[in-house]
Amino acid sequence: MASKLTNLSPVTICGEVLPPPQLIQNIPILHWILQEVLEDWLRAVKPYQAQVDSVGDNSVKEWAVGPGFMELQPALLKSLFSYAFFFAAADNAYANFYKDLNRANHLSGLNLKHRKPPTKNSFVKKIGMIRDIAIAHIPSDKANPLDAWAAMSWQPMALSWSHGDQPDLEQLTFAPLRFHARDTKGRTIQSRDLEVPGLKVAHFNHCLPYLERFDKVCREYLQALDGALG
Image (cartoon, rainbow, N blue to C red):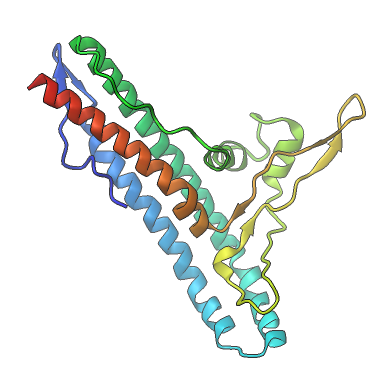
């Protein structure tokens, strides 16, 4: 998806340009980067998946999965962490865009009714958490000790499929395990969920729909302000 903010212009209220042109220009770039990160991952997977697909016997197929499972893990980490970083950037950009629209709405005295930003579901929050505690700090000083340990324990990864189904290396799963410990009161606690079941699934099923909704809210809001200001 390409952002539909591309062809829009900011509004000027009391000499202030809102939102800044840089935001309008950079949000589409962030969308392109996310798409390119996904494509980089799919290109890395392609030769390994082709090898798996070329094997007919299921028992041999499981053996063919092994090299891809092991050798693709650095590529998945690079792609997933890049994706989380730029997704968080896109989310912040939209949030600031929306904040600037609210400011324009207030300064203009129009007080137009408008839709709210999309609510972050648990998966979107998880991508942000991966950025915060698994990338920026190893171990993180922004997380409790158990979460910090889980965040730097990137492996093991996992790949599972039902009997008779075709193994799909695109579904290589990040951080499927939860770490357990006891707190000072002897209660069992576990690390937060960081599992991502495939970057393609993360993009198309969770992250992209969220960004598309945010894009639509911002576009309609800006167009309404521009139309009311004449």
